[in-house]
Length: 149
Image 1 (spheres, rainbow, N blue to C red):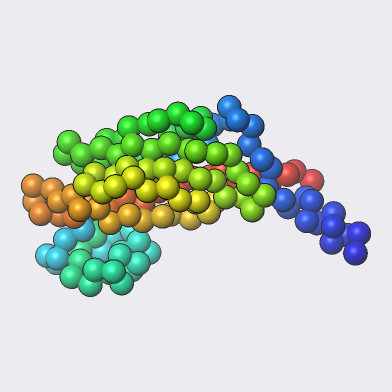
Image 2: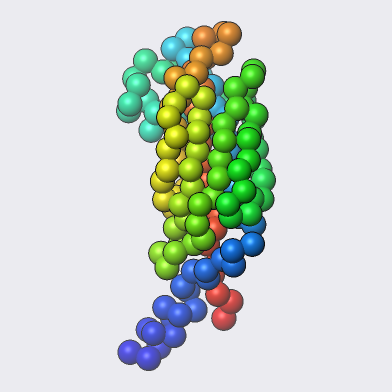
């Protein structure tokens, strides 16, 4: 029983200090109903998006944004063309290793959600490029840190 308690303590997420930055990764994905090509790097996101919108059959990674953000600091991220997204980390990691963030994607209302460490959260926006590709953003924060043994 004691060894199980020690295992839990050693593998519990560490709460981030208020000023410690959080690594945020944003994938800017463009989707269309023209063609069937799906880049390997976005295959998992394409599979999820296709469940919601089966007409989207072509997916490509436009670019990736990596940044370290302090809790509470608003960051405006350039996506595609003149479209931007505002993002803020609202609170530090909780006991389950989750963190709350708020995003304002183009042509959508503000979204506040609790992210799971190391998992991308895809958002299908209502923004279309000049080439009629639909903008999808996938956001991941890496707020959890494991205690070292």
